[in-house]
Length: 384
Image 1 (cartoon, rainbow, N blue to C red):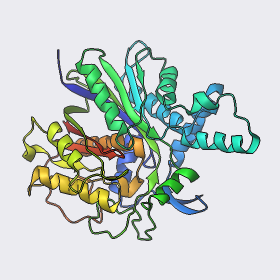
Image 2 (image 1 turned 180 degrees about the horizontal axis):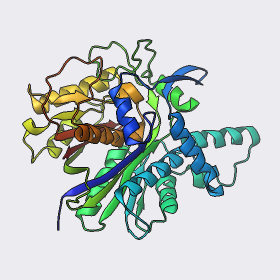
Image 3 (image 1 turned 90 degrees about the vertical axis):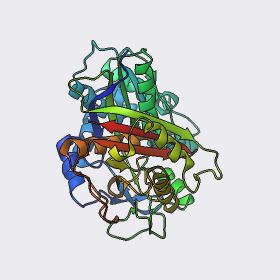
Image 4 (image 1 turned 60 degrees about the vertical axis):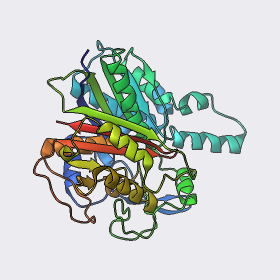
């Protein structure tokens, strides 16, 4: 039984756009995607979908009366999934599994329904079925008319990469030949922003780059939130239409010293990276797309973990959160997309304010990291 896993397509909807050409052009410029919106009783920087993506979501919402009651996180996933299977050439005759997770699920809709309940003492009929976490994969399955297994879950900010792990496990176990995996998040709400401010991690930075992700010298937390979804098509075997191959996967969980923190040298990341790289010469890894949420502790501990694993011969390091913010459960697959685009174009996308790094002539292997509350790390090694 073949163990090679092919990624035959990837699609996303985010502040960067929803077409590969546009997304790549936006990665190449030095502009961030943050704009102001009035949230949590004040002007707040967030990264929201671009206009074209919002139009696509609205068109999808109006296309079916049943879709009008769905949360944006569900609609994001549906829109990205349609594009992903079209690019991979899948159709209604294909039997494929679906695992699309979300850290928070139907956040906006839940808040709306709860506020209405407080005001009227009544809940709308569809409140429960439209706000459950399993809502995402089940509606994607309905929209695509698929007949395979449906899985939804939340493992905080590493949710999307855990979805990829699940897809790989099903494929390698021979329980499926194809799997649709990813994450979706629509967290730009009053209560979500308030929660991040309560943790004292939301950015008050007035710099030209308000989210200083992978700035190891920053003296304040600079996390900002973004929204979006990204979806991968996985297939067992080495497919001719593959855009990348999964060479290694790793995962780990560490004992928590605090509700939201990981250890000083991110033991979970060290373990997950070593697992993903166990059959790979470390010198062959050209780039690491870091989780790097923009917090003082989060960025620094991940960097220390990378130093522990790679020593002084570090790959090129980058992240996309300085540009689009933290998209919670969707962030890992958006990082996968960034990695694939860098391999396709053979061009490294740096963090503009990071220290200069030693460049590699080619980009053939990229490691992607994600971690979330609970110390649950995932590392995925991609190769061309």
